[in-house]
Length: 165
Image 1 (tube, helix red, strand yellow):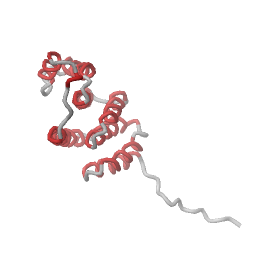
Image 2 (cartoon, helix red, strand yellow; image 1 turned 90 degrees about the horizontal axis):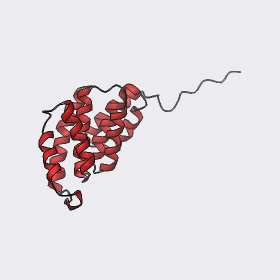
Image 3 (cartoon, rainbow, N blue to C red; image 1 turned 135 degrees about the vertical axis):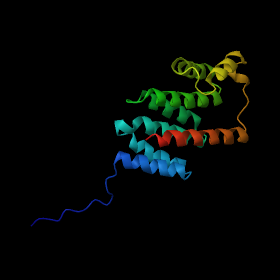
Image 4 (spheres, one colour; image 1 turned 180 degrees about the vertical axis):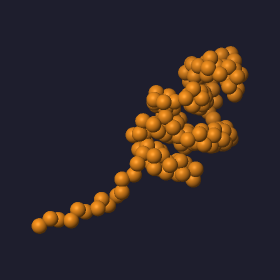
């Protein structure tokens, strides 16, 4: 006698659905839960770049800056990114590295942006400022106000980047 096939308790969720869930959770301010969903979305090579970029933004929003750097670097190494997306990710990577006081790596990111898009945002000013300042060891810790301003910047950038799905 044949046994009936049991339905799986958990329906299969595609990477695209995971990505959309991740964006919704991020929008709702549930950054850790968003990261979980976005990490599952990277299984689809077509979504990897955007999912890693969103993971980086979420990690940055919750103060996990090293994780954010790793995610942005993963995004940059993912296939299929447009030059515009690459510049956007490099800029946020540079800002994250800058907040960590990693001046040489920051300059490398900003200089790459300047070669590709010489007038991109405030990159030229940041390069000049970082090139003439004291070593990173004298950098003060970010204040809560600095983090709020960065959070506002990330939200605007995230909305722009997320809208280019």
